[in-house]
Image (tube, rainbow, N blue to C red):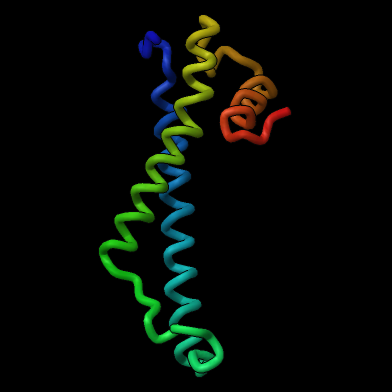
Amino acid sequence: MDLRGVDIDALLESLILSLLGAGIGWLVALGLIGLIKEVGLQESIARADRVAFDGATLAVCVGMTGLVSLLTGLLPALKAASAGTGLKDLPNREVLQLSSRAEGRGR
């Protein structure tokens, strides 16, 4: 498939939004783990003392974020490129339909 028609802006937007979401999720998870330990709920949660965020956890988070952002950004762009038009040329409704189909939520 010819990738010259792929909209790089859509890919970058998808990547940036995915990374922001992953970063916010990471911070929320760190905060909740700290709150659980501070409040003393560790005893009521099985293996709560073993929960930790380390380099391997961060690597999996970043890797999955990159993969999902590529899939959700690349599939609609490839679909638009194969149709002979760019995402910028399609009406907003069609872009949203292409995006939802790529994510598996389309009808």
